[in-house]
Amino acid sequence: MSGPRSLRARLVAGVLGIVLVMAAVIGTISTLSLRNGLIERLDSQVRAAASRVEFRRHGDVPKQALEERSDEDEADNGMRPAPPDDDDDPPVPKGLDAAGQRVGTLTVVVAGEKADGSAPAASRAITAGYIREDGSYRALSAAEVSSLLDLEETGEPVSARIDSLGDYRVLVGHDSRTGDKVITGLSMEEDNDLVRDQILFLGLIALAGAAIAAFSGRALVRSSLAPLERVASTAQRVASLPLAHGEVSINERVDDADLATSQEVSQVGGALNTLLGHVEAALAARQRSETQVRQFVADASHELRTPLASIRGYTELIRRGSGERQDPGGTGAPEAAGRTAGPLGLSEEASYALDRVHSESLRMTALVEDLLLLARLDSGRPVAREEVDLVGILVDAVADARAAGPDHEWSLDLAILTPPEGMSEEEAEDFEPAPAIVGGEEARLRQVIVNLLANARVHTPAGTRVTTTLKREGKRLVIRVADNGPGIEESVRDRIFVRFARGDASRERSTGSTGLGMSIALAIVVSHGGALTVESSTDEADHGTVFTVELPAADVE
Image 1 (tube, rainbow, N blue to C red):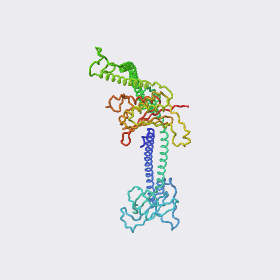
Image 2 (spheres, rainbow, N blue to C red):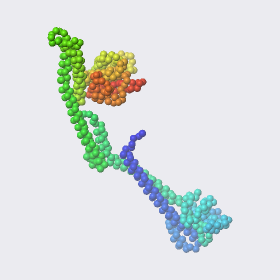
Image 3 (cartoon, rainbow, N blue to C red):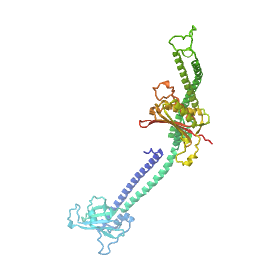
Image 4 (cartoon, helix red, strand yellow):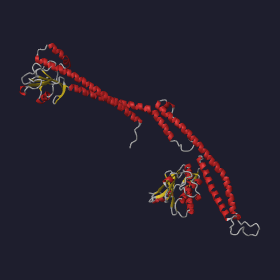
């Protein structure tokens, strides 16, 4: 399905449509007006021709009257048909040869025809003919005469179609003296040609006007919408800014010159400038709040490190103590029968409580260290740039994971060290893999891999196969940690990189998870210019999870 048309195209199409509609209306009105005027003129000419026929038939009308009535027609066509030369020519209806009759005039005389048409057919004597273009006479055929005789006498000229002659304007009348029925007609061919030429001319004018309107309208609309397009470009540039995090400053605004072009652009551009000002203020407030929270977390974490270190140190000192606490009498017997003495003579309950204090201090210390690391990464502090070999990190991390989770199947695929497919045996023997080197902090990158492997170990059942792969794809090194475990639900997968998010809300905290492992891994990878993504499926036939780490390869000589 195609998208909506641009406003420019719709405006040009609208203007073009209006021009064509107006041209059609004007052309129709002017053509109808021209046709009506031509018909009125032709009707007056038909009446004049009928009068000349009557004058010619009776011969008692003064010649001056005949000339006065035929002046207009003679000015149009002064041709006077020549009378028949011999008896072989068709008979000419009396009156058709009257002075002033023009080419195309026809006359039909039915002798003895009464006004009501009641005269017997046998008594009719019909004479019919018309004037050809060369000025000679031609008799009308029986079919042509029959079509003319079917016309009713209305006293007004009517239009008739004669097969071989075309359109005619015909007047049917009666001679009051002789009782003859007289039909006089003039050809409409010239008027029809004139109307057709008018329609063709108006059509060409309409097309030329439409073309002019299209080009000029397109230029006008383009110039009118140019400020609005610049407003849209401003909005697009703002939309492309990274507004989700970090310090944001929106310097884009609609120019004052564009605001002054029109009222509509001024309204839209002014509203956009106001909106951008509000957004910038809101983002600045959000940034100040985030900075304060980040600083508070960093300061609190830093302050907690000292007491946590003291707690951990003293618990270690107590736990390392040896010997049993003696009774006050110095007999060397235990303090009380049936009670087991712990380190430094502590009871079993006290020793258990001491162990819990020590383990919780370790967990809290790890949480504080994670918070400090996130605070440093959020502040945008650049990471140290040193050459880090990913092969060594992966070998050590997989070995450690195998020791920590012997109930899982661990495998390492260093595809980056093997010859590419399609190489010949000789090329494979001479193949020297490029070093898998990236620029960054080795300890942080190692932490990412350890977190991913620990995540696979903790959240998959025993017997799960975990495969770690290292490949080179273009200028990036790609690490994939894939397992065939039960997979991650979509609701959990969408927030897996959110801080303090847990894959199982009902899971006990005894696992030691803080919900920061994946968010820390993502922050570390992003700080190294890479990307961390996850794909997972919970289908019974095909289930499992794949974490993909992409890092830019370092340029190594």
